[in-house]
Image 1: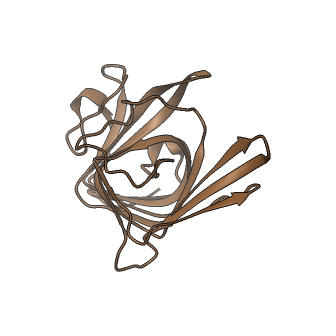
Image 2: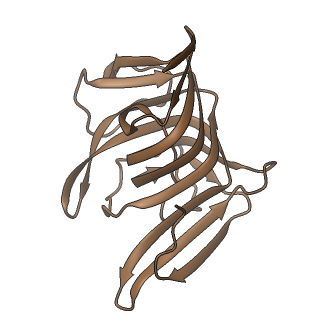
Length: 203
């Protein structure tokens, strides 16, 4: 860990429980009502992959532990929540088993650096991430009930449990798997979607 100053910290390839990240929903392209919650809908339990060379948050994020209910039972997740985020060259992929074999759905957006993907009130239920990350004014170990810098935690949480927050976050070379995502708004500039037979993932 390389501490740059009291208010800035850079961590390289940091573990999932300590890194905020981003994903797109499997049914991407819908602007959910303002303040949508990641825990407010039934989760399929199928993982999907997301990659981006850069995600920038400038107005607060929070991360805490949670549980999502799936048809196979409850699964633990790290919930990352951003007040807003801009995302460059977003790729999302999901592999769906079908009677004719696996079918991959891949989505790309924000490929033009001048028109990145834009999201607000973004909540992500994730279980794995690899990225380079830089945080500003990072608080690690704050009570989940006392976070102030990002969206207020939602869904099942343990009162007084571990959380972390920061004023700003920049993530680069992000590769992650997630179970669910929701957003108040999700603006997908330059959206492209393709369907492939077999396995064709973002990474």
